[in-house]
Length: 112
Image (cartoon, rainbow, N blue to C red; front, top):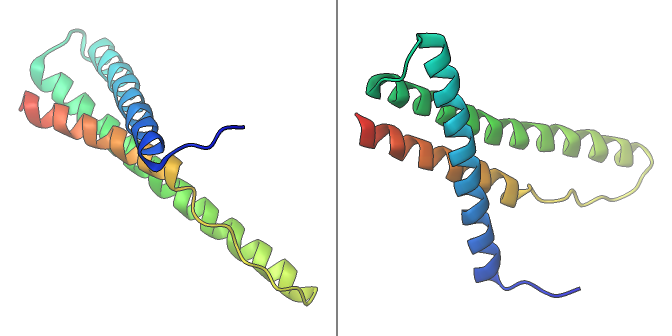
């Protein structure tokens, strides 16, 4: 098992975020074009905005889920009289979704 430097991990998160943004953006633009019957610049900008919102809500759902799981686990351990340090938030997944959302919002801004 090799250790990963902080710069390499950050680069990997940026790459994954870019991939998530481009994949989500392509899917949203495709769905928008199919629903509208054609692809327009305004339609693509709207689709990219929706894709950015989807990824932003995904990041929020990850945080909400992790906090709920943490509360449940802490409560169960407290009943047993055990001390428990809850795990930290999964920052890599959260930042990946937010980076992807940022890519889509920048694309929307460029098209408007």
